[in-house]
Length: 186
Image (cartoon, rainbow, N blue to C red; front, side, top):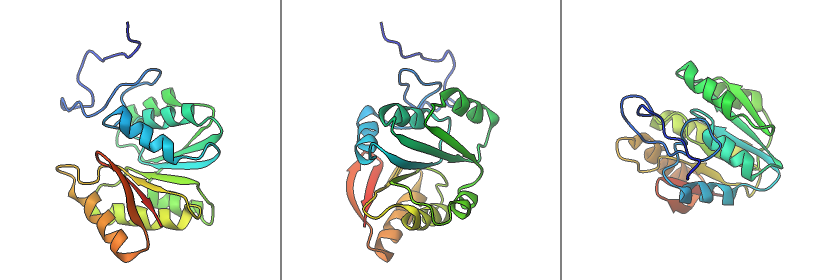
């Protein structure tokens, strides 16, 4: 018997089951498959700071925190709905922290801090994603990756436009793609 729980109603709202349920998390992760989760985990060093821009309900952050107990997982989200904030609280692990606010405020507060890896799945507009990419490049430690979700995802053109523009303007390049996840390195 599987310990993965399925809700009695469609999740997320509007009958759009775009999430995947994993054991020991409250609510679904937005990652399309276990392969995408493994690609993310592979890029995160065992220790250091991992920043997640856009956490939704925190299930992905919890999965990462479980697999990288020596890392500090910092989730950033302004939460469009209190239900997602409550899910993050339910998913919280000892090595997780929440910045409850927009990424633009987080980047200001981050200042000269360094993160060993950064995952972007927040603002899906071209300008919003491009802003997060530029700030992530400033904050990520030398040699660290920037991971971007929803690249070339149907109906979400802004992310791919931002990534392609960012790569054209900088030394950053896509080095790996797993479904709609891309890994960038300078």
